Image 1 (tube, rainbow, N blue to C red):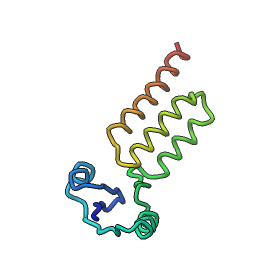
Image 2: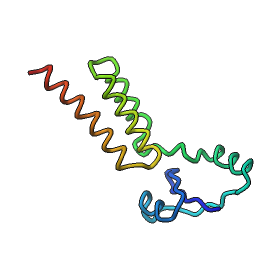
Image 3: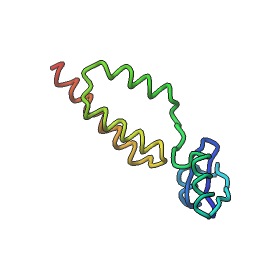
Amino acid sequence: MKLYKNSNGVWAGTQADARKMCGKDYQTVDVPVDKPSLLRFLNAHKVGAGADPYGDQLVSDWYDKTRNTTVDDNALSYFRWGYDKLFTGQYDEGKELIKKALEMVNDRTTTSDG
């Protein structure tokens, strides 16, 4: 069986997905097909864990700055959900969820200021 991976650690199951997520920057990886070897391979290579294209520090900084403020738990929940989607390569869904979180924060800020 084959999977596709780019240099940032993003994995895809098909060439079409690899092209969509990575452009031309991906390589083919042969994966074992028997269940014990496959599970060992997936865990060892952290397939499905995704790679953080934005850097751990950026996200943790944002989280640290907002967790002690009036940011609504609902907005943080949408942010985490969107971030998880980005982390697993579901970019469009992730961007929409993060956009919704930011809109919730902006709405709350605007409402409390005015």
